[in-house]
Length: 162
Figure 1 (cartoon, rainbow, N blue to C red):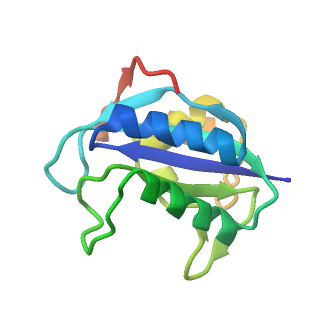
Figure 2: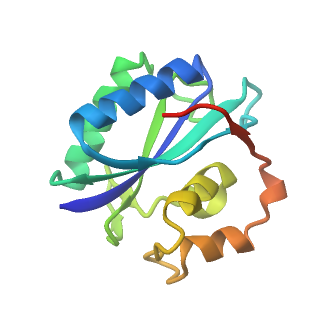
């Protein structure tokens, strides 16, 4: 079994879509834990606030198979793929880490660069996996969070249990 970390986000009916996402992840995977949910402003465009979390699961699927499952969950939430990657969305599930693998292929890129770039990814990951070692930097996720300029992407803890 492989350990996988997923970034979860939504800014279009975010409570409903994150609850749907958590339910389907539990149905399809051996879900270990989901972090707290954090609210943050849209990044890269003007739009409603996002709700974000990170999930950890065990799977026997390959990275490509995991991505295929995630696309099916996107479809269940009514996500429409468009040309603009910086736009509102019903659901955004990103494969952040797959074990300690480093993969740079057309369909799979892990570790995802967003881990070290955005507080709404790094903070919930540090919450559920502080001792996890980033496969490229060799530093713990907790250390990355401690060194992160959190004021660059302010977060607010949401009262939403997934």
